[in-house]
Image (cartoon, one colour):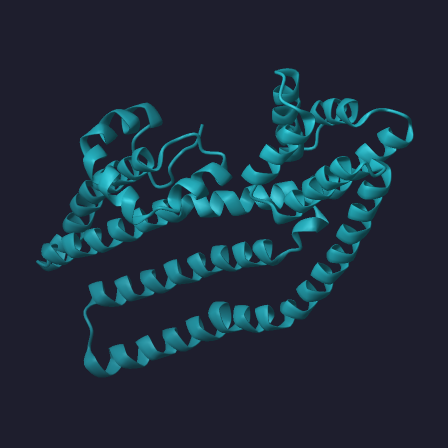
Length: 293
């Protein structure tokens, strides 16, 4: 179950009204062939044409709401048409953000998978060294608290119990998973099983490689912090300060109206708040994925 961002309608109503836009979603899904892959990697059980039609429905209702709100706001200065134009622009941006949401959700899922990967492989290693078979280790791991890793192995165990060969079930999981590190670990295990190698040694090698990759990620992250700090100083301190000074000087020379001055300062405040959230998001995304939460 997923929720489309910036939707004013609850999911049941959104799905019901989205049937009105289904033919447009069907046409647009042919223009965006990779959207279905992003939906699958994000774990969204929905066809791309249905997802697009739901995005169209959500953005249409947002357009109606923003048109009324902005028109009432700009009606004070007899420029209500500007509110409609602004509503169209904002709604279009929201629509494209909704289309890009599966990619964002997929990236979040990758980070969750990567953060628990090392710990889960170490748990499998301990169980194998204790004499437990690989399948039993997967069963134990699927019932433990390893987040997305446990969910993935639950699917593998379910397929194996349904009669699918163990190697085939692991191959399916590797093909459908969005995390490159998780796929690499599974393929190493699969190749080891096909060649008859000792799985303990294969997993030990995988853990060693992931530890090296983790160190590389940490060093890279440390090198990115100084430019990010400079970027924060520019966006959160220097630009707002210079903008306020510029508006004060400009207002004294030109004699801007109170509405324009208030709107300018309100826009500047919104920019600073947006920048703070954006910067915290950048810091979070730059954090090494293998390091854990």
